[in-house]
Image 1 (spheres, one colour):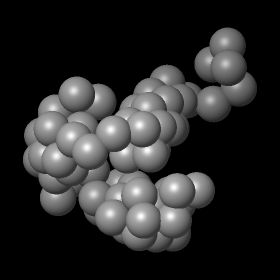
Image 2 (cartoon, helix red, strand yellow):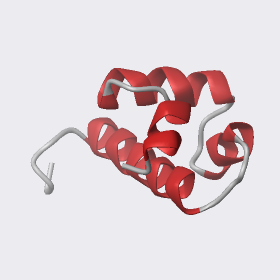
Image 3 (cartoon, helix red, strand yellow):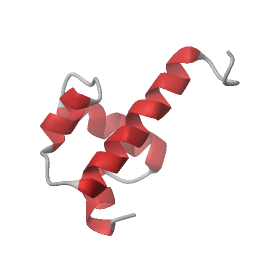
Image 4 (cartoon, helix red, strand yellow):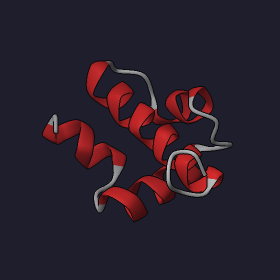
Length: 65
């Protein structure tokens, strides 16, 4: 709670922010990025990403946001 939120919430946010950076910076597959940031599958990453950011990882990559 030192960062003002539960540990799992903080960890999820950190992992998704890292995934967002990797989507913008390179051409790694979604499956590879998912493994790099601790998700078991591209589907799991995609679901969490869309829930938090409101767009799919592919849309995020295409926007260069």
